[in-house]
Image (cartoon, rainbow, N blue to C red; front, top):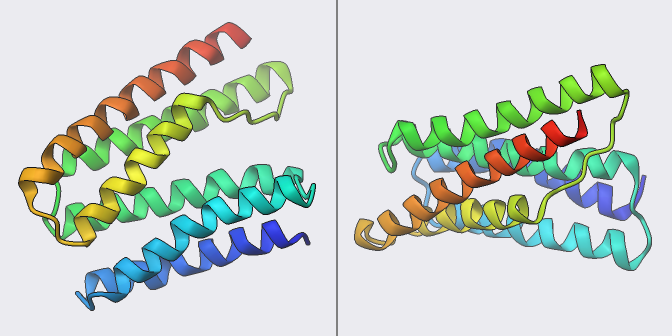
Length: 169
């Protein structure tokens, strides 16, 4: 197993730790763990490219780690009342649409290639930054516009994947 994949697995294993610490309100630990996971997301990508360790497993695990972290974070923040449930639903819906679209393409075309879109990467950065700002306790007057921008990028990114998938079919 490559170093990049090991870093990604550490990110995945830290998700439940982050969620439990967040639920228990044990500041500053959730912010520290979350910061570590988003920095290690950049690190595993750098290592994979720099050391030429790009693998099919890594191409699957890296976006999976991102999705698990984002979905569990937004669900937990909604549960804690730190953001509206509808925001979590928008983020979840986009990811469901992406997975269903990939499944349909796989069934009809036999293609398993997963290509991240530029807009998707921007969306992930916005989603991560939004969670980070919320768990740091930044006032709602600052987080509200950021949440709206994040939702906007999430919706547009979902539409981008839908259009791209439709063209592949």
